[in-house]
Image (cartoon, rainbow, N blue to C red; front, side, top):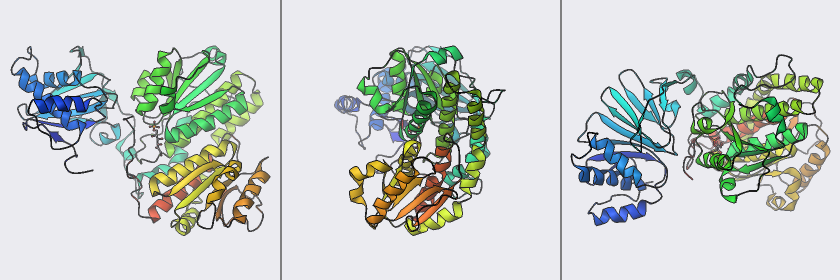
Length: 538
Ligand code: F6R
């Protein structure tokens, strides 16, 4: 990153300034044209190219804007020539008091405040000033001029604005006495889970209910496959959901990275229900995967946190996570609520099929108890902090788990690497002997999930393999569970729980471990290098 490449960019005639989120794919052709028209460039960015393209159309247009604002029309004309994605806001020296903003495949929200308008890509940036917002749609421009604003499309059609109300408060977007948003969001997970499940159990307490599926129970029952697409942490949540749906409902599930699905043209059974999972609802790969699935005629449901996001708007139905804004770049409460909602979808499908009333009641009671179990897991924080201090200097980690905790091993490794820059890998514990075991030595600790259950002894054998090679072991084990003496260097206990809740509870220690290690190493936890909260470029 250099000063020359930093936004805003200014056109070479000095008239326009532009900020831009996204990628202009055909910028080199446009640049070559503008260079031939004597426009000059100070940076290597596609944004400066777009800014000069606006200046070019403005100069060409003169006063010929068909009664429209020449500023607005020059932005509109320029956008007709660009390929790619953008959320932009432009200023013009000849139109003081005006802003023109537009979006295509990058989020853009207009805040309607008291005597002011605000533009942002995420509602959390606006909420301290206003809770009234307009979510711009793809291909829309907003022209703010003094006290007024007007929305139109790239094709010059007027759009009546819909002003939505953000349903969370500014307190939810502040750190509330915590050192970092990530810490705050880890500790608010019991409440987040309560909010995510609130009002979503049937009156007889034996199944889940969702208001926004736009499918009758009969229609839902008739799907004989499910496909889940997501990116990053949300993809890990899908893997756990796959495990639970297949385990309890016995319906086959496929999970794919959205970025792969959109290009691999997978053959899908026509009777497949498609899910996308995304905290932000703006991840471009997930959005594109969803559009591809819809194009092929599949019904798409979204599990999503940000109300009014692109994914929420375009899905055929869905389930909001209701966990409030997640501001730390590393996903925490959004992840555990995705696990919870995935477990509830598994319950819903199971009860439409073979699961008995009594098993449904047990399952529901277990989910209702999840916030309290998470509280108990969080109570281990001082102990995990002390462990983190002793492990913060290591440069490689393995995270090992089996069955529904294999995705949590992936999540632990992702959390650690993204916020502390320590190389870490997640693996199914038994798969370790097929390669990763070569990494094991006194310099490479392994974090093992060792919950009680039928494969506990298998996990113990994998731990013995690590110990035999002098690898330090941190075990995350069920309270009161007897590990052979000397096998683990450190043990973090989690409460005993139902299978559907175990992944949620087991996530807490790895979130805390990663967080405290990153703090110990002096890392910028909430804004790790090279990462963005929502990835709106391909
Ligand atoms: C990691 C993390 C990312 C996101 C991914 C998808 O902590 O936050 O891996 O999970 O970029 O984001 P959403 O869920 O907004 O689609």
